[in-house]
Picture 1: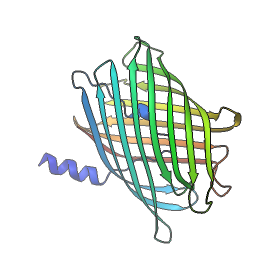
Picture 2 (picture 1 turned 90 degrees about the vertical axis):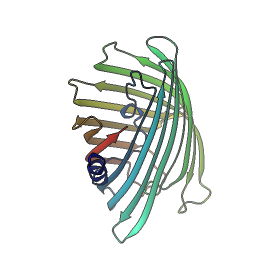
Picture 3 (picture 1 turned 120 degrees about the horizontal axis):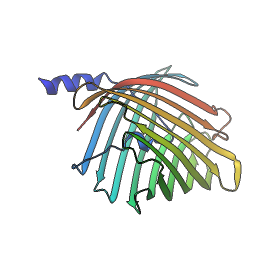
Length: 251
């Protein structure tokens, strides 16, 4: 019976989107379990340039043996826009961390994505850099990352043959708070300027609040903010934001 209840809650949940994946919201202390995963089916209503109804599927797998950390994320969305036309957005993200010391890890990541609303036919990222642990308290964790990344971006159909190849910085500040056994607050802010032109930058911030309902089921509220100083076309808004909530099942 419990399995059917989980499936029911799973089907009515809602969640968020992001052009920059908030990896911190997916990292979880694994204790003695090296493998951790989660999967969700989300429904949400979005307001930006259009009124959008979306069904989304997200899955992630994590491996952590205290020295090596691997994370894979697959995030796919099917969207319905006003006149019943459909839009697809998808992201695949792979990240590896290697512990250097108690406070320092080295990160390497690769990401591929497409986003019809932002006129992104394909955007590929490959980056690396250090990650610093700023606090030792397991219940109040603060991190700073200073990475550099290569970006390949191809516009979608309205702008044929528009391809950009850039080197960007990717600096982030993140905190994870666990004030009680049932409450989790996670927030990450990214600043990603182009190295040869700091006026061309992206800024994003994602904050998630989780309340544990059962051992493997939690209520989730999420606020996502994104600003791109130079989007692909002038028709794409520089600033987008979204608030969503729903249920998250982990295993």
